[in-house]
Each structure stands twice: as C-alpha cells, then as structure tokens.
Length: 121
Image (tube, rainbow, N blue to C red; front, top):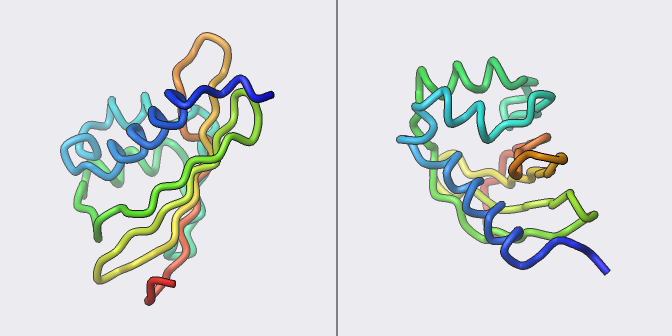
C-alpha cells in the first residue's frame, strides 16, 4: 500500500498550479523552492532546461501560454508522484511532471516534459 496520501496528491497539483501562476513564476526564489536541485525539463520547444535556467527564464518572462487543465496525479512510489495535464491555448501542450519528496523536504518537481499539442483528445 502506498504511503502517499490524498493530501499529497492535492498538494502536488497545487504546487504545479503555482508554477503556472505568473506572480509565482516571476519570483525566482519561490520557483527555486519548488524545483528540486537536480531538476531537468525537456521543453515543448525541444530545449533542455535545468533549475537555474528555468528560474532565470521564468523571472524574465513569467507569462503563461495558456490555461492548465485535466490535472491527474498518480502515486508511483511512497515519495514519487507523476502529474499529467494539458495547457490549453494558442500554444497548447501536453505536460508531465515527476514530483519527489526527499527526507526532510517538501514536494519538489524533479522532472518536467512538455509536448506540443494542437487538439484536445
């Protein structure tokens, strides 16, 4: 039986939504708190990002290209949650994030991938 509680699933969705909030995105400090030190992102653009480059890019341009919808968190292990969702808007995309909770820390995003999408399936 998984040790991940429903509250953890809700918390991960809440934290991901914070990363979609322009006010939070503009705060380099809060973004760094949400990102794991070993964070990696494969962006929808094809670019690979790390914690420092994402934090700097979001601070410089906190705009979001669309609205996050269809959030689905799934516990993969006691301290690992996969979260999938989509961004709807002019630059639509499918998104997946892996959130981890290391000993003594809050949930932090360890990996993120965006894939361009033109239609809602």
